[in-house]
Length: 269
Image (cartoon, rainbow, N blue to C red; front, side, top):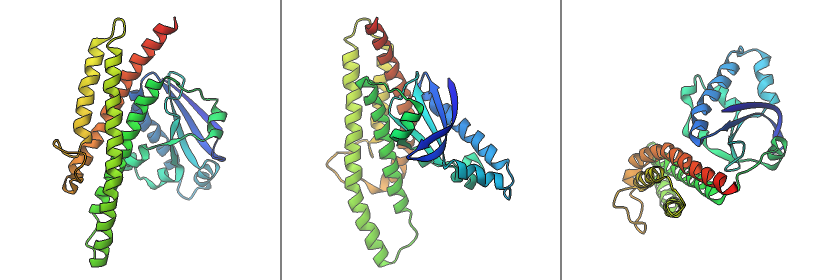
C-alpha cells in the first residue's frame, strides 16, 4: 500500500487536498479509507474553534479527495470527494454516513494533474461497474426508505408523498435490472475463465458463491418477480441486505481483478 499527498491538485478548477491511495486489492482501499478520515478529522479538530487557522485550512482546500489506484492505475476513473466542512460538522468519525462513501467521476483537470493511468481491460471495468450498480441501488433504496419515514403528513402532503413514491418505484426497478445485468456478467466471466489453461477452480467457485449471495441481497424478496411492483413494506430489510452487499461486492471485485491481472500478466509474457 502506498499513500501520496498532493496539495496542488484542482477538482473542477477548485483547489483540493488530494490523497492518492495505491493498493494491490480493492478491499484494502476501503480498509484504509476510514483511517484517512480519522486523521483528517483529528487534525481539523485539534485546532481551536476560534482559531483562524482552521478556517484557513478549509478555505485553502475546498475538499478532501482520495483517489484509489489498483496496482498504480485507476480502475473506475472515480474518487471520494468530501467537503472539508463536513469533517468540521462531525463530533467524531462515528458520524460518517453511507453517502460519504459514494465516489465521483474524476474531472479532467484532476486526471491531468495526477497524470493518472487507467486499467483498460474490459473485465476490470465491468466488475468495477458492478460495484457502482450495487452502490446506486443502495442509495436509491435508502432514499425511498427515508421518504417513508417522514413524520405525520396532512392529506395534501400524504398525497404528494404517495405520488412521489409511486413514481420513484420505476426508477429503482430500472436500477435493480441494471444490477442484475451486472451480476449476470460475472457468471459469464466465470464461464469464460473456466475454459482458460489451468484455471483457478477454487477462486472461480468462490466467485460463483459470491454472486449467489449478492443476488439474494439485491432482490427485495426471495420470490421477487421483476415485473411486479416493489414491495414497499420491505424497504428496511432490503436496505440492510444492500448494506451487506456493498461489502461483499468489494471481495468479489478483488477476486475477479486478481484473476484478470494474472491472466493479463501470463498472456503478456
